[in-house]
Length: 116
Image 1 (tube, rainbow, N blue to C red):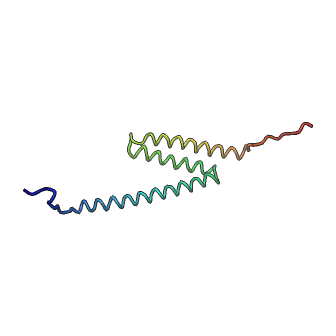
Image 2: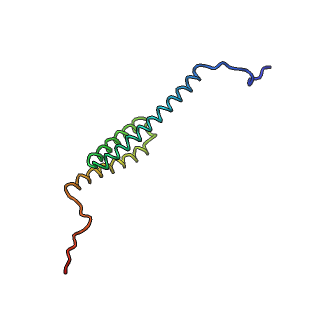
Image 3: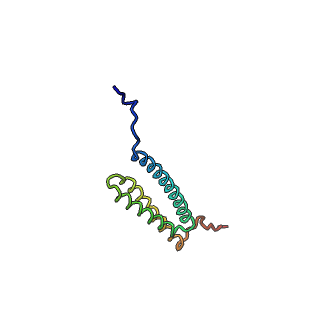
């Protein structure tokens, strides 16, 4: 009787191709994560230097992420979409407060007049 462990099986091209596809996909995914991180850094700098525009930019970006999460695979990423919705509301509040601070500046230190 021939043992199954000593028998050599020919390698199929599907297995080899599958490994290559997984490696390429992993590299592309990592590159996408790096691009996304760079884009978030740029968005953060826009919010830092122009909060009126940057708040709305981040809110639009988060809105796109929410739509993508809800439509891509329903019933799976609703918790992440809900978290991003909270961030979207926060970004809109930031943009609105930045717009109001231009028209109504806040005095950090009250003017104290000496009574003497």
